[in-house]
Image 1 (cartoon, rainbow over the protein chains, first blue to last red):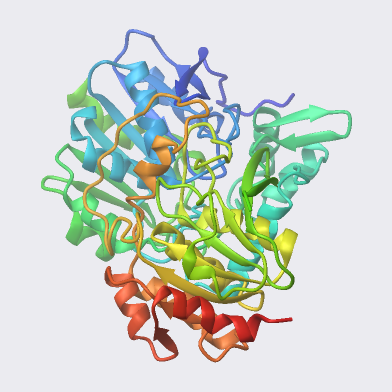
Image 2 (image 1 turned 135 degrees about the horizontal axis):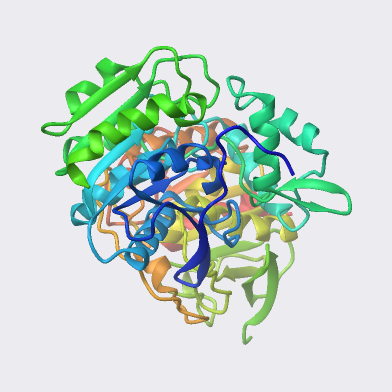
Length: 302
Length: 221
């Protein structure tokens, strides 16, 4: 196993059921403290909050995060979709709290909360979105939405992968090897962090370490969705809102939304922070700065 | 003949593929509408077809398996049809309703293998329209093996179908197909996506029986 400065394993683990799928839940902080539901991004998992969540917990919050279907320690599913993830979030939320909570989502998780909270605003007393505001055709961790002009090759590759799904498996490697393979997705994060992630996001067998994520899931894809539709969901939100955007335009996993793309769609009273020099994984790259920003915003909602 | 059923693999699930009529040469594949299942007998409008007539139950429909926890998208149902393509090779498709939309998608994705599609009326032809409204989100209990899967009914009646997205698939088909008119519209009900497809140069309109017959000479082996 590896350690990482400030990383703390969850204080409690459990699971919730979403229509027959078992979702793994991790919690940090006092069980009686007000709750922040933290939703991870695509190809991440809830243990990627191992540094950030304890900072929020130490600020007086109960931070609860679950692994999306096919990710981390949650069940793999036969089908994956944006709508199914949103429904899973609803199932987890209603199982974990009977009153409105603070909701925080990073990247794809933040984008999904836009939909969930547009449809079910009573779930949240405040919403924090960390670089999950899609205004451009660039969201590489989302595989059922259009991110560029669709190419026929994408369709063929998708079907070819589905044909081979019974043969697909995550390639085994050493901790260092697996971390190195993830580095192109996270070029701004340290090798030390990525090696730590392997030890909490991969499992070890006779051949080495393999990421737990379902091998049928892959980066990129195609679909009819347009980012402008999500902006309409943003504008329709009814709860206090803090959006934090990464200003680093060349981060390979970044969503590349600019302040001027988002500002016209902020809900009434909504707040937008723009971080020129922090990459897409804001809460991992600068956890103290982002945690302080979030804690200050959330202070009235304790 | 009474229909003969075989099961194709789709990951850990099984897809039911029914043979409604035996024959030599290229198959005609029928795709049902949302919430429906394959017919028990060969429809009269396939009479001109000399090859085998097949019918697929989509995932979560008819005799096919039901996945746990939903997650349906028409794009994923392309993979159901692709399992038939993997087993039978070149084929012509008639799709009803939801099946028409899936037929267009898979024809665009496998444009050199799908030799003609007929888009017909049926349940689920409109989907969720061209643009999503504020979503209705609700959790459903696990449903076991019941078909049609309630998740399929919920999710496949809400997927968005913009006209320009449909036209991307039309372009793929028309660019790659060796047929003169590889897309035939028989449907009378025309949601936005289908109206756009029908208006595209290279797409023709015929009755269902005429449409099936139009592919026979080109499909004969």
